[in-house]
Image: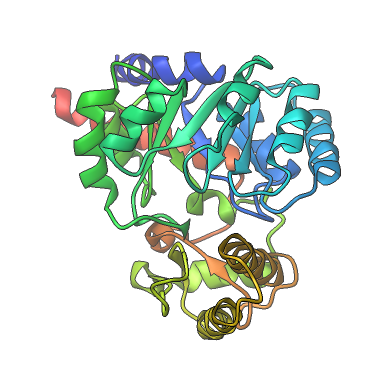
Amino acid sequence: MTTAKLASLMARGTDFLGCETAILCGAMSWVSERNLVAAISNAGGFGVIACGAMTPELLDREIAATKALTDRPFGVNLITMHPQLFDLIDVCARHEVGHVVLAGGLPPKGSIEAIKQKGAKLICFAPALSLAKKLVRSGVDALVVEGMEAGGHIGPVSTSVLAQEILPDMAEQVPVFVAGGIGRGEAIAAYLEMGAAGVQLGTRFACATESIAHPNFKKAFFRASARDAVASVQIDARLPVIPVRALKNAGTESFTAKQREVATLLDGGTIEMMEAQLQIEHYWAGALRRAVIDGDVEGGSLMAGQSVGMVTKEEPVATIIAQLMEEAAQALARRAA
């Protein structure tokens, strides 16, 4: 009965995504690649490739490699400020990717139309109710409500507050997926009962057996507690820096130095604001690669959400998803008793 209740609450999300379990994997650069994405989709969830700073050629190869590992649906996350965004959209269309996630700000002019005219469903992040309404009016098919507890780029508002603000107004209009700080099934059940169509988790999957992350990276997660995942500090109000949540290390201080460097270039008129933002993004891409791929857990970026304290060991993706679903079902059973 409770399993049926859980399936019923997730039905809108699973119908929209075309999978068995309405759990999306957050797009984590260098981590959410073919192996993890395919494993999540094969386990009944919904894997999402993190395009990040990939060129169209690299994305083309990554999608093809993922399709070789799974025949289940998966999506692609694209960054709105990518200079070749429309070329990346074309790559997704050629591969008939069914779902595109746009992240990093409001979709630029023409991007929504370009994605939807190729037949894909579009998912966007909504950091406030007003923006959620604007995105849906613009033709977005589904929303992700992500709170500041999440890893990587974050906004200023907590998941629980955003969910209370946005779900009552938007959940009946489009599928809404809740993200940020979710590490157990009890939280999933609660957000589903509030009207969410499903959830998105990143940190919980970062250290899965199928994740290619370096053993040093995974060990840093296993040792960490929630309070170790801190948000970066903006040192210059003119520089449009979106805060990033990561485990505190020497790389956190390096980012402060990078901001000063970019601000100086901005002062001297050497670069424009868009280039300044891209330099910041490239910094994060490089720092994250050093941690995830090379295992440099001191100088690299250990992007992690506050749910990192619930990541205690390496487990197969299928085990993680099954545990989350069991916890959610048990939570619903306790409430029904």
